[in-house]
Length: 70
Image (cartoon, rainbow, N blue to C red; front, top):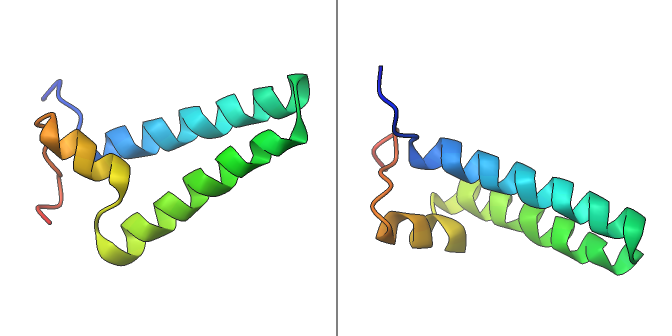
């Protein structure tokens, strides 16, 4: 069993964390933080459609390899 997470898993964890953070910020501060949730969702669809998004490009620069080999 490997201890390194593939790119897809890291992206999923990052998107989930940002969505939770956005929900907390909306509840505590302002509904304008829903823009952060929309940005996360758009980036997820960009990754699905194109196989890359800004976060995936940055993570690849840090040496995180995709599991699917795209």
